[in-house]
Length: 410
Ligand code: SF4
Image 1 (tube, rainbow, N blue to C red):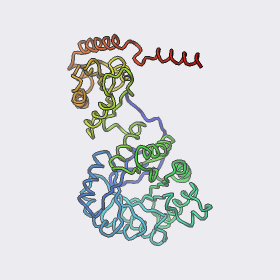
Image 2: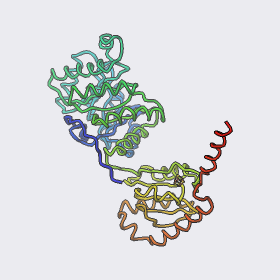
Image 3: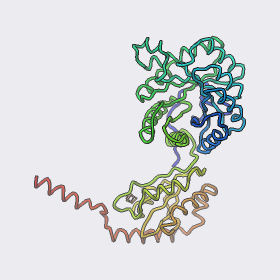
Image 4: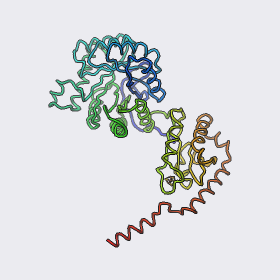
């Protein structure tokens, strides 16, 4: 099914993070952060490659000590994606990261506080044409601002922190800026970003910080990021999960693709929830299919359906799918029966056909098979299943009868 984004995006200026445009109508980019020691160049590069393969557009590395800064000098030229240096406390690390050739800096206004240090970094960035993300974090807000706002972290205090930093940048005429106002509270970050979007047209980097391990972390991050994206707010995103950073990238891509905000890159695997009719262990086969497709660049929707009685119809919009019946897998393409394979070859057949369709298209795939024969086979297995299970595989009539009896007895 073709999905077109129906969310009107807030107009923002554009900054370039290396060769990746952020804001100004550019596709929303996906970011993640390495969790290796940046000084360990090989381990960090290995992770950057894995993140890029999963669909990361931009990767951030911590630059927390002189060794990390030196590591960046080796990493930057070998990285497949632009590198952002994460700076906390020491503005000298920011200057060193610029020396290393990074494509962007992230500064936390809560812990680099001296105006002359902030302006020195901004001047250097201006000379080099390197953008800065003002990364306000609810957990490390400037103490004066917190005190001013009733000793509480409020959306207003977070926005004010970003504006104070912007004012320092303006003093040195530096405006290559994107901003984030992250918090671990979804409600707080949503409010902060909404208020920020009202007062600035700089591109915004969205995230729920310290969201935690999946699945809770995924739900929290999605609640915050998706709400704002649906309002048109957000130009680049990061899931902060307590998990392998590759999971962050996958989550980011999946969110954007599911909202029609990015072109599909990998398989969108859909599967029925399974029910009394299922002829296979749908959970296991769907999982095997997910693993078999992995990071393959096949921009298709693929369905795994538990039975041939309803599967091909329910997943008729998928590019490709398989439905089980009578120990066989009925392969269907855009809702049309195409082939029959043994049950234990279902996943292999899906991968093989997905590759063919991605390369040659749906029409070429259908021209290759005997659709009439496949339809007859599917009809036969459907009839067999209906005969053995009847129309009511979940025994709904019996359950309703039982309910009525209990009601009557009660
Ligand atoms: S009817 Fe078939 S396709 Fe639908 S949920 Fe049940 S097993 Fe899956």
